[in-house]
Image (cartoon, rainbow, N blue to C red; front, side, top):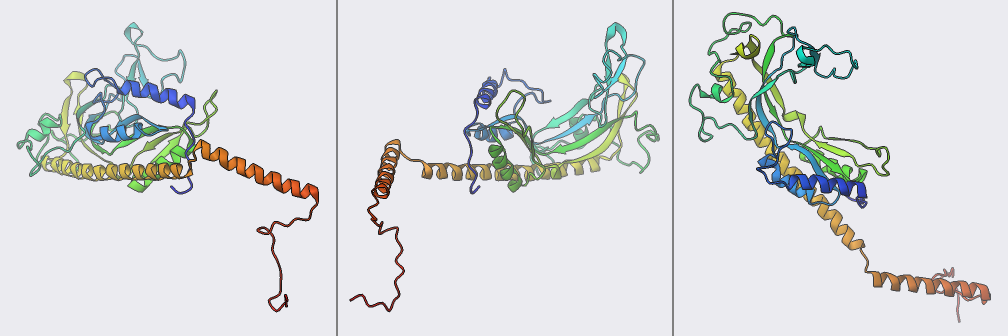
Length: 347
């Protein structure tokens, strides 16, 4: 981080950081956030603490990495008033309403909203063969929320029961996902954001970026938010669908138990690589901040020393000006340059 100087955090940033840290200080039993887990992930607590102890940085949201099974929400209208996820507010006052004026939202692209649900979420590797207390044969499907619906032998174009998924746009699909760490950090300046991004890219989080690069309305200073992430480790696979609607719907798995275990093995490997990148990021950030702190200490000057230096410089300039005014022709021997040939006889 040679040549990078971090400015002092503006007052607005300091106030916002204080509010965030106050929320994080709530006891774990009382703390809740908007994530499916509802709390800060254990695997990332140390990193969050290290970032928040640094001047000019504060975390706003995070996920240590997770493996999940997700059932999409409803993607077709069922008679009651509906609203496509993401269309809210597009036509003010013009949305359809169901009984009692309630608007039911449909899932958008990817299945989010519309009653979508997490069948399984884990922020740690899922134990399998040779990895600890693994699930017994047939229990993995139950663990992942599939209720033993996976088939051992499935043809390429069919699902259990001999039916083909014909209306994909309306079918509630089941996704198996692995998502690596993502960390959002509010920074005090563009220089703070630049330092954090360098560390993230160096650690392998190559899809990291920053937003809010200009000052908000009414603010004098920009306080960018940096997203530290890596899409290269993420993967997703469709493993089933829901037949039927509502509570009567039955989960149908379109992959074999062996294939499902393969997905879990891959996710566990990605967890290991994700952990390595987190550690590399922690090391890079600590080293960068140590370098900047050392540089700041080298440039620091005691107030008394600075006064004496300024006084000496002022006296020297005063003497030089006095000599010029007197026109004495005095020569500053240290500053003068004598151009004398080497063969000159000075006797």
